[in-house]
Length: 436
Image 1 (cartoon, rainbow, N blue to C red):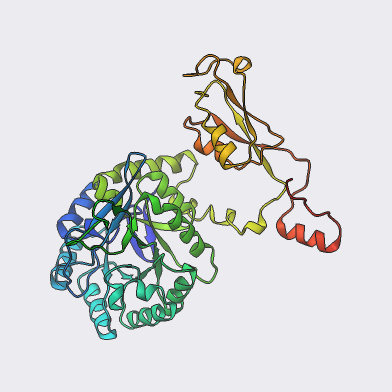
Image 2: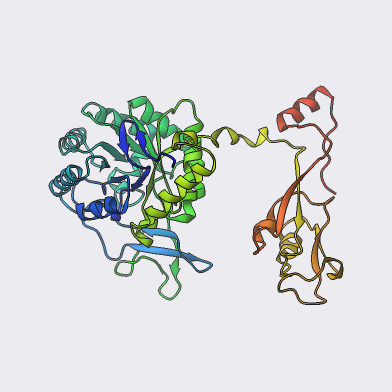
C-alpha cells in the first residue's frame, strides 16, 4: 500500500488531507471529530480580534441538480476569543501529537502579529497560516485580500511574522488578483516556508427575483462573499500550477479549492501540491468523506506503481506551458461508437450551432440500432476531413465513451507558433490561409 504520509515544510501528518480553515475547524470538538474520522491535519478557523457575524451567511449554487456546485459565504473569521482558540489548539495537539494542527491568523499591526505568532507557538501549533485571502468583511478593514492583493504589503507583513516565528509559516494567497505568482514570490522573498491556495473568490451567487436582493441577505441587504466548492477547482488548479512552475517561488504548496474526491486530490498533487485542504465538501457531506479520499488515493498510487505521494507530486507540471508551445500540426477527430449512441443527436446540434458544422445527420440503417434509438431516426456522422478536433461533441455527449477524440496522422512534422513565425520571417514556409 502506498505511503500517504507527508512532510510539509517540516510539518508532518499521516496523510495529506487537512481540514481547511473555516466553519469545520472552528472548535476543538470538530478537530477531534475530524481526526477520529481520519483527517491528517486541521487548519484552525482564523484567529484574530473577535468579530460579530451576521445572519444569514451562506448561499449555494445548484447546477443540473447538483447541490453546492458552488458555495458562497459572508462569514468572517472566528467570533470566539483568542484565549479560547489557543487553549483548544493546545488541548487538541496534546491528544493528537502525530497530526498537524495549524493556527490560522489575521491581525493588523506589527505588534499584534508578533503577539499572535508567539502565542501560536506557545500553544503547541505545528505551524502558522497567514490569512491573506479573505475577500469580504476583513478586507474592508485593511486585512485579508487587501494584503494578498498587494505583494509589497504582503512581503512587509510576512517579514513582521518572520521576526518572531519559530514554527513553519504558510502564506494563504488570494485568487482575487491578476497574477498570483507575484504574491507567492513576495512570500518567498520575505522568508515564508510555504504557501497555500486558493482562498475564496469574490462573488455574488444569485439574485432573488422576487425581492431583488442577492442571497444571503441580512435585513433586506446583501454583500459580496467568498466563492468556493467544486466550481472553483479549475481556477485553483491553474493557480497551483502557476506557483509550482515558477522557479522564483520554489515553496511547498498546500492546495485548496473544490477538493472533494480522491481524483481531485490526485490532480492537485500532480500539479505540485503536498498537502490538500478541504472545507466545502466537509460542510456538505461531513468528515467521513476522508475515508473514500484516502482509500481512493492510495489505490490510485498502487495502480500506477507509485510507493508514495512524492512520486506523483508535480508530475503534470512540465506538461503545461504557453499556447505558443503547442503543435499546430497535431490533429484529433471525433469518432462515434454507434453501439453506445442513444440517438439524442445533441452532438449534431452542438456542432451545428456552437462549433464547426462537421457532424451530419444521416440514415441510421448502415449503423444498426443502438440503445434507446428510434427506428428510422437519423444518426450523427462526423465528416473527419472537416473536423477540427475541438472536443465539444464529446463533452456534451451524455454517454461516456460514445464519442472519442482520436489522434490522426497529418503527415506533417510538429510546428509551434514560434516555429511558424520564424518560418514566415525566413521565407521557408507559406502563410496558413484562414478557413473560407
